[in-house]
Structure formats: C-alpha cells, structure tokens
Length: 130
Image (cartoon, rainbow, N blue to C red; front, side, top):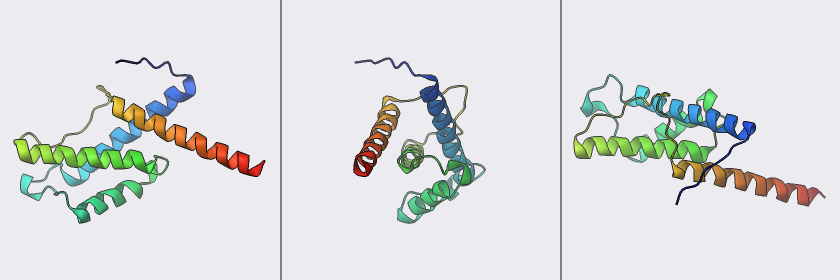
C-alpha cells in the first residue's frame, strides 16, 4: 500500500532539516569510527561502544535539537551497516550523499509518531492549565 504525502512549507522545512541532520549524524559516525582505519580497528558493537556512539551523538552541538529517538535510529543503522560489513565482507560503511536522499516509510512513521506524541503532550499540558 502506498501513500502520498502533501507537506505544507513548515513540514517540508522540518523534514529537510531533519534529513540533513540525520545524514550528517551518520556521516559523523563514519568519519569518527570508520574513515581511514584498518578493518581490524573499526569498532565492534558492544555496550561500551554503543554508549560511546550515543554520547557522541547527544553531545554534538548541532544535533541538540534532534529528538533522541532519531539519534537512536541513526546509531542502530550505523551498527547494522558495520554488522553487514563484517558478515558479508562488503565494503565498510561510507558517507551518505545529499544527492541521493532516501527516506524510508519507517523513518516517516517515526517522525509522525514523534510529532503525534509531542502534540498529545502539549494538549495534556494545555488541558491541565485550563
């Protein structure tokens, strides 16, 4: 089943900004943990490295306004690409390019669910104060 979204200008700016920041966050992880490293030196997924990656994402100044659920999704995607690299002997994770933006249905659902939750919380706060 396919759906077509008709975004207003505000939503379009939001999706563009989030897409750019999420791509930038993934590229930050690639440059920090993969680029110019021997394949043996590329990090492996464990509790310590997951915390290290999460801390890097959440403490990066230009990612402060990105919801943490999106950052967790980027972290998960990064470790999945590392797992695929090791399991299937494919090329290591590479930088995402702006010329080929792909937004998956999963990402769209994630963004809309986040917006719904924010609106729900705002409604609860407004009803509490009224």
